[in-house]
Amino acid sequence: MLAVAPVLAACSSEAAPPAHADAPVIVPGAPGQSGPAPARSPAQAGPVAEDVRFAEAMIPHHRQALEMAGLAAARAGDPLVTAVAERVVDGQRPEIAVMESWLRSLGRTPPSAHDHGPGGYGMAGEEELNRLRTARGRAFDTLFLTLMIRHHEGAVSMAAQELRRGRDRAMRTMAQDVVTGQQIEIARMRGIQRRLG
Image (cartoon, rainbow, N blue to C red; front, top):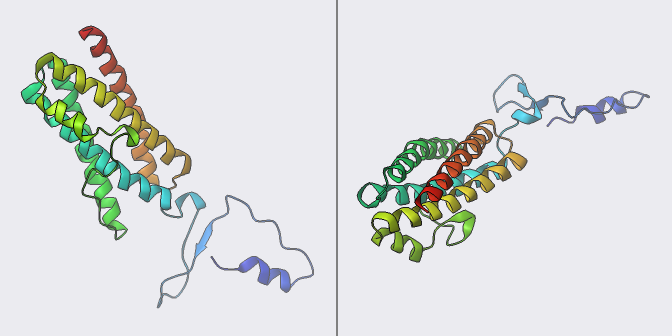
């Protein structure tokens, strides 16, 4: 940011006016440009570390949800569980693509693995995943719903943190979509749980 106020204060006997929080940020132009880049407000000043952390954590989180959901077609006993799994795939696969593209636009390589480990934001541990892979029918439905509800609750917590600390408009929009969509899905899955008894 250009240090305009101190220079003006040095040339005048009057104190410089106080800076305002909503004042635009003047960004120096790139080498060879004749002037500064267009001014941006602080809310549009670009991504911060929290935005990057959100995308880099949510991608593997979503990938594990896709892995669990992909098991349902051959293993679920209740068609409502299959429908939940299909909605997970339809909703989260495009979100992964958006976050990967956003990270690449920053010159970062998207993560490629489930790196949270058990207990991290609702992620399933390997033993839990193995149980899900071998379960069939009602046993699959019950375990799938338990794991996916916990998984969704973890995603909502991650998204809420992004909404508190993130600044990038695309990532904040993504986080709001996660909060809204996954809370609806949690309620729906709890309803199926109650019906299954």
